Length: 159
Image 1 (cartoon, rainbow, N blue to C red):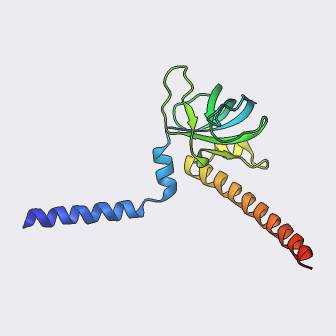
Image 2 (cartoon, helix red, strand yellow):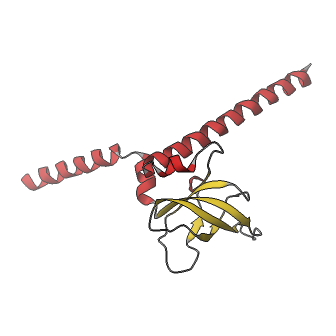
Image 3 (tube, rainbow, N blue to C red):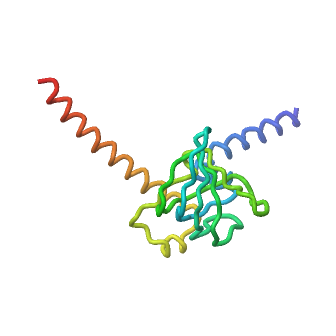
């Protein structure tokens, strides 16, 4: 009886700990490396809609990376000259390109107004949240602008 009560208590504790874990904590825990990098060159898109992208690492947010140029294999578009927060679940292994981006939340444009020196002074959690929040606000603003335009055009068409 005591064993089953102990197991039940452990089970309830495990559930409450997992329920309290925030998505940002899971994002950070599952990340092998997170960097802020400048896109230097975008290669051709292959049949799987992936491209090898040459980037220069400007800041290591999390992981054992160094400031250097690397190749990122991305499913999501990047533009030359753009600055991005990049994340991979893989760990570095020699000189092979280990950055394979398969998730939308693994390549996030950094706001043009962002100052790299300020980001370097922040914790990884704050860097990721700040970058995601600014991108989210920019996307929401764009959606509102497009909806306003769509409503105006649809109003004219109905008359």
